[in-house]
Amino acid sequence: MTLLIDRKEDRQFGVMENKSWRKPVYETHGLNLWYGTTHALKNIDLSINEKEVTAIIGPSGCGKSTYLKTLNRMVEMVPNVHISGNLSFKGENILDKSMPVELLRSKVGMVFQKPNPFPKSIFENVAFGPKIHGIRNKAMLEKIVQESLEKAALWDEVKDRLHTSAYGLSGGQQQRLCIARCLAVDPEVILMDEPTSALDPVSTLKVEELIDSIKNDVTIAIVTHNMQQAARISDRTAFFLNGDVIECDATSKIFNNPSDKLTEDYINGRFG
Image (cartoon, rainbow, N blue to C red):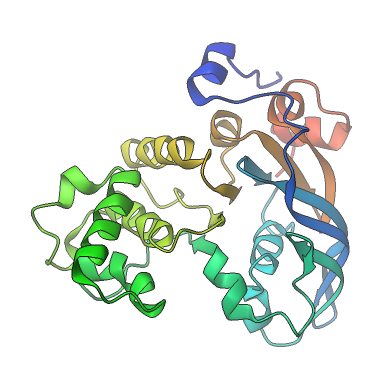
């Protein structure tokens, strides 16, 4: 049975079927990546559009997280990685070694599968990035911390305990803190690698609501194994399989009327 997207749900989450007018932030052409002799990404052609949520789905080991980590060059931290092709961010080829990786990562935040707050206070977690960028004024830092926590729907829960350890927060709160930490440096893109897989349903819903609330201000690419989540929160969905992009289109089309039978079989649970 095809997984249909509820049109009421579309309205709730603001999913639009046709956003072709959105400019691409990332453009990938003929991207290949090898881990040693393992060909993990194969001639990837894909774009990530500005101020949209792009979901990346597919079975384990298909290249989803590898692709996500090429977008901020974090994949280069893995030994014996070889990359070819073109991957541009706002028209600049980020695979060119002349591109400062620090500059790229100042514009592209990352949220991981498991919450990873720093061993610092809640306040210092959020203020860390702005301080690195040279902001020292106490009033300005307080403003940034409050605004970032408000955007992350966490302020009301932590405003009276800002100077206590971030480790005292629940898992869901820690993940929203990590998102607030990203927002504090005003990124253009946030990459999310299965950000709710370790969370309970209530915390998952709060993170999804947070994604919906910020997507008009920041571009989001999210890897998820959860088909319902991809259908709920994304504008476009890319289906990866064995290192290939099988199909990328408006989320409603991918889930209701995919062009490729492999996509249909995966969506309907016939493999993966």
